[in-house]
Length: 291
Image 1 (tube, rainbow, N blue to C red):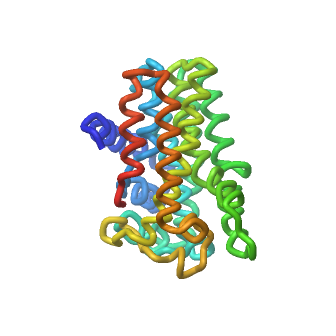
Image 2 (tube, helix red, strand yellow):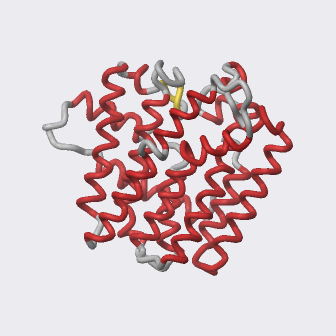
């Protein structure tokens, strides 16, 4: 990523650690479990997108930092729960033992619950004025809920039992499971920055395209990636016969689709001119990443 994206990445890390320092009313073990997963690193793609969207519409990125942190908390909660034995049953996440391995299953569930609910407290408390706060709460709740990320995860589990999978089904799953939160990250940055309806629409379309492209690359890296770089196990999709883009389109067909989606995304943000250089760089990073 570019130097400016790296700078925002650092700022996000600082803000996340500041917000996660809770009072003594939070049991110490729960605090440790929440901080364990939240501070484990990662690309911080979603919070970076939030700040970049705010910048693209001419807003103050400092005002969007609470929204960026809230998004990362929701994303981290989803990873904690996805890794549980009842879901993907993973032992490794971001190069470290998964939360339920480092603590226990009950604590991991509660840590995820804590991050999810605390995210909305951040939005309600730190986003101003009130109408923008309410809009961000609505945006994140819809993206993370039963018609968004949670619904996509359920559809993904049901998709494992599908005998005649199609590309339409797969895209439907990942537009909810991955794409909705990515699109919401951009919309929330735009909302905090005071975006007009046309700008918000362009940000959402950009988000929809890069969201699918991100998932396609993720599927490809499960085949071609290295565990040391990925920070998690690889080869699990094929081992469990999961519905993926390479399983339907092949490796080359999947890469071509990802490139087309990134091209579409880059077209959408041309209306922002020079202010969209960060979004453009991030789109290119998604297609070039190796972890």
